[in-house]
Image 1 (cartoon, one colour):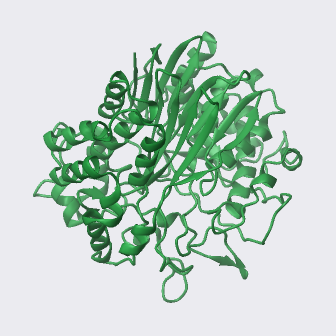
Image 2 (cartoon, rainbow, N blue to C red):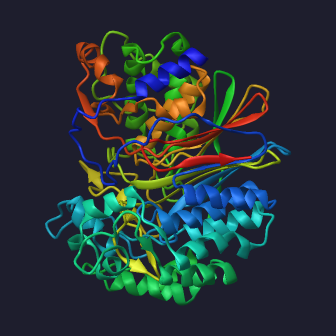
Image 3 (cartoon, rainbow, N blue to C red):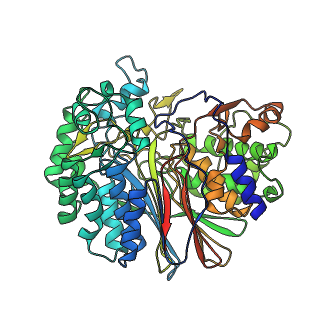
Length: 576
């Protein structure tokens, strides 16, 4: 195991000379220095910012549950990492209770207004809008789900009083915090000219320059909303003064939206059945539709299970080949079948059927790439849908928690694009999650499952995941940011931990790679450059990319908690 850990760290250390060919919406801002895994024996939080992880740890030290710590951490992330998540967005949460063995998954995904129609993102000539134009529009704002999701998680799994959980975020919003290099870098990439007036007031100086690194950023309007949240819970966000602010901000956009007070009033966080399967005798449980993350990851793992990955140490070209071929097949099915299960008949049982996946696995060749994989025809399928290959890279955050009683939470939250729509209401940024819908809503007269619709929740790639070992004990809590690449990045960590025996930090640091049923993408400037010729010889179209993952994980091993935080962001794992 030590040899593999050392190898993983070596492979993660890339040269800065290679220039990526693609810039992602939440752009990469470099790697932090290599670090060892965090180790604890009682409880642990891994999150994308030190302030957030520290807030979660303080809640655990006060006797809070994993859900309590997750709420506090998520609220602080709204303050210190506003480009990625917040009260104006949504998320998915997976909770594990070792006493009962139950895995509960909660859906706080944003919902479209009831006025939404399939042509929402088409121009007057019926052509899909350009993505930047759709983002900077009130039409892209969905009903925020995170306030309801956090409140529901606390109601079901919390221990401490609700106001205690918001206290760290309120303090940081009122007293301020020092702007981090990542926040400054992303503000600079956005530019004041693309920010709304409300956003410029908060995040930019009077001359249009972004708040400098180390500048104390105070957010009084956000502090007021957090105080209301602490005192009254989510009610004002859906039926009170904050709800009115949200509606007004959407209606007042340069390209107005149609979100109404009735849309906010009707919103609820929803419990969904967890999507679970096995991989090498481990139980993998994640989020089902409207997220595609849990389904696609399980498909990939099952497609790879017949191959002895443990014998293929990274950066073996065959490992990358097999991994990307499995991704092509999973993303092909994702494009055709996965959408909001309340609005579309998703053939979930068929997509995870052992016989169906055996047939899909047989399509993987050792001597050649599939290139573009076709979707399958799973059993128990109802209805006919055209594929929507949309697989954007977007701004998101993830946190993982294990408390002193072994309860675990994996929470992935997002406002979609970096800084969302750039619209602000009551001190927080509003999401553009509705651009996760398909823009072209039919192909050759066949409808697309992920088309916009009244009250519909757009397909997501978020993949908060809980892993249990062959004895049913908690083994790993993991998830990531990074849009559609979340699926590949989380699968990479699962293979790193289960097949290669890596600790979470080493598995996270491995170079990212994958295919979203297009080019074979790999993290630029890493040791994966070495396998490119072998992949091209197998017919892969290879493309280096900037990696925007935000993997955060906590593992249980030999009675210890071992945590990892993605060096591509600013996070840490903290525990006692």
